[in-house]
Length: 290
Image (cartoon, rainbow, N blue to C red; front, side):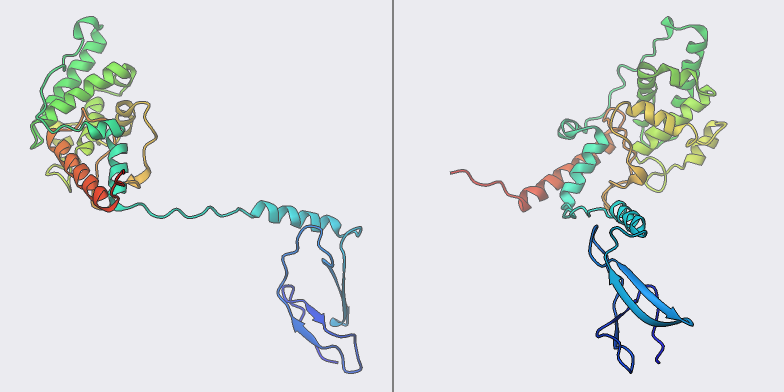
C-alpha cells in the first residue's frame, strides 16, 4: 500500500472508493468554511501511522461543534472590510489644506497679509499683578527681548513678545507654573521660532546656539511643546511628524494663527496660496453658466 501525505493544510481526499490498488488522491488547500456549512468535519483513519481511510460529514450535532463555532467567531473578528482607497489629492489641494491647518482656517488663509508688523498691543498688565507674577513676566519679557536680537529678522522680537502676551491672556498658569522665567522664554522661542522657520536648516540660527547666547538652563525643546499647546489653544490636534506637510513646503510648526508669524513668513505663505489657487483654477475650471 502507498504512503499518502497527511499535512494538516493539505488533507487528502479520495476521488473513488477504495480498490485493491488503494485510492486515487489529489491535494486541496484548506477551505474557508462558512458558518453552518456542510461536511466541515473530516475523519482520518490511520493504521500504524499510515492513512487507510478518510470521510467527511456535517459537524452539527457532534462533540466537535464547539470548535467550529469558535473558529467562526475568530474568522468574524479577524475580517475587516477594507475601505475603498481615496484617490490622492492634487498637489495644489494638498498645499491649500496645509495652509488651512497652518494658519487656523480658510478665512485666515484668505486674509493673509504680508504688511510689516507693528509693535502695538504688547503691554503686559504688570500693575494689576502680585509681586511673584510681575517678576515672572518681567523676567521672561527681558529674556525674549534679548532673544529677538539674535534673529536676523527684526520682527522676531515682536512676535516673541506677542506670544508671551497671548499665553498670559489665555493660560497664565502655564507661565506661573513653569520652572523659571527662562523656561517660559525657552518654550516661546522654540514654538515661535519653528513656526517661522527661523532655525537651521531653514534659518541661520540653531536652537542650541540661541540657548547658549541667552544662558538658558534647558534645551528650547524641553518646555516648547507646553508653550505650543498654550499658543494653539483649542484648535484641532497637532499633526504627527508634520505628516500633512507637502514635500515642497517649508517645515513650519502649525500654531493655527497668523499673529505670531513675521511678515516675511506671511509673504511666503501668500505666494504658496496664490500659486496653488492659480494651479487649481487652471486644472479645475469653473463651468460656464448659460
